[in-house]
Length: 577
Image (cartoon, rainbow, N blue to C red; front, top):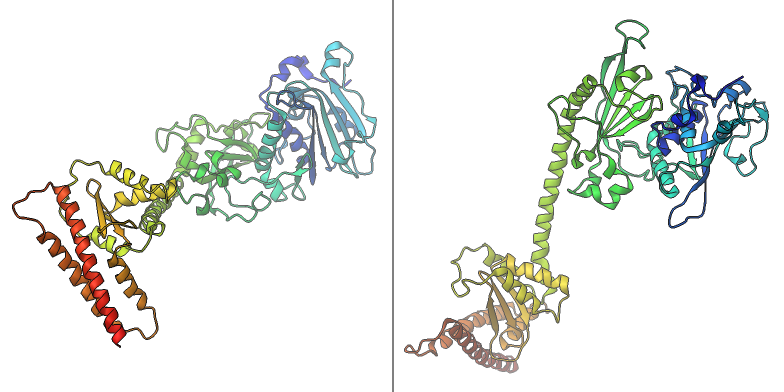
């Protein structure tokens, strides 16, 4: 008689293991990989969603590995039995994984298997039947073909099909479980997806509901077979290797040691060009936002991923992993001989190095970690400075949202030290700049007005081109330290000057004549100011703002008169020619 459970352990207590859904599925995948399967397929059957929650009806696992003979199949559902018990060369070892994983999730497990040249054989276990006394032992394997709707999951010449039914221990929505499994499997078995890991003869492909599982590399050094095969590869540092003693109860001889290998990488700069990039879509699509911690692999199969508990132990280094640590990757490789040192559980879920080993790993990682973070911060600082300079250029180029080009004059004023203004003492620059920017709501949208506001605050003089009726050729608004100058483009001055400038683009232009006219413009500008200033009676006092307003109006009026006279003179001389 072949019993289900040795040592007469209670079924219910066995169901309370340390598995979660994805690690339970991993035990079946492990067996397929151990059987040298080139293709592993997982199919979920789910019930229609109710209130947004979808329940798993059954899960089927198929592979094209070498299969199990009748004896192996008969024993495969026994807890504590394994054809590879204590075999340290592959993934398995303990002989409890697949059955305990299955009963953690469901009550009925059916297994079909076929070796090359043989027939399909079938056996099963059903917890309800066991508890009812209807099933006292594992049924002798019988010849039976896989169900027609699942036969395509297993190999034709050889392979295994495992179906979990009576799914009664589902903690999450089926869609979330399937999504998590894709990520977990792609990361956990990445080396088996890439390479032929001995003693296997080739890599493996894993499919979930017909969709290929892409590899996920926490080092970001091997983009092949990932969702983004054209991504740049991370910089990988030389492996750090050191010997560690094997537990005496596991060692072949006294003093026996095995090698632990630490592989570190610095993620491509394209992913970390600026601070905060770890939360953007590009990073999240590649799971960089989750990449804080270490990946520990046993015989190239990941058994731990994340931040190692009690990392602060040792009193030096760094007390915990931070968001910035996502920009470097770390793999720790060890062989099964060091299971005790890494405290690997019999279900291969979790690995926490012993205190002494943890301190050693931490000391060896720290120098490279510090080097990477220094480079990451340097790149961020350079990008921050670049953005600052770019924003300054954009601010200066905000004249594109205005008429004309007065940038050079504004820059001269900005770089020329002058006394502080007196007329607008007490005014708040932020408020005044905002108020002036809002005056342009009829011409500029909110974003453009925000640019103008920033421009008004960034430089002592900002020139805007406007048009209005009246004698002034400009108006000035004082903003609490800075000033806004508005040119009245309908004034004769600007028509004359810009007309002269346009003439410079014409063929056969009289450049000397234009230069002479520009000198006349300058003279008349100053003459008009002197005339406006002289129009005030010395015995009359004006408030400053009223004085300035009257001065600008008079100046503009006199300047218009002078310009019109000069243009008539120039026109007459040109007519005479």
